[in-house]
Image (cartoon, rainbow, N blue to C red):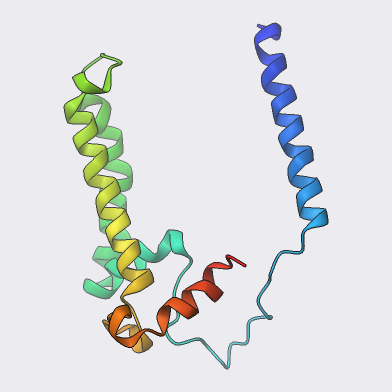
Length: 145
């Protein structure tokens, strides 16, 4: 058991040392300190919460913020082992599991992309190829520099 864990532990220590070295050498671009009197328009959540923010813009907050994540995040994920009882390892033989995962990933990705690209001032629907201003803001927001 120890001989199997040693390479994993060495990899963990090497990656930790690499991350500490990179974070000490590179200067991460940080935004200015948040000012509660001046908020950005639109006030967007981080990219990993944009799907939830998009759901909140469509439905009542009790339904979109509590019930849907609870039903999908807890009940549906707990039910997956009982729904997909196939023990095969090949993806070609696990069509139902791949369909479930693809449906979930496509829904989450679509909601996040809508929140990133198609939401403008006042959280109104905007087309980036017509208005053209949100791609410049996207580069500042994601920090690709």
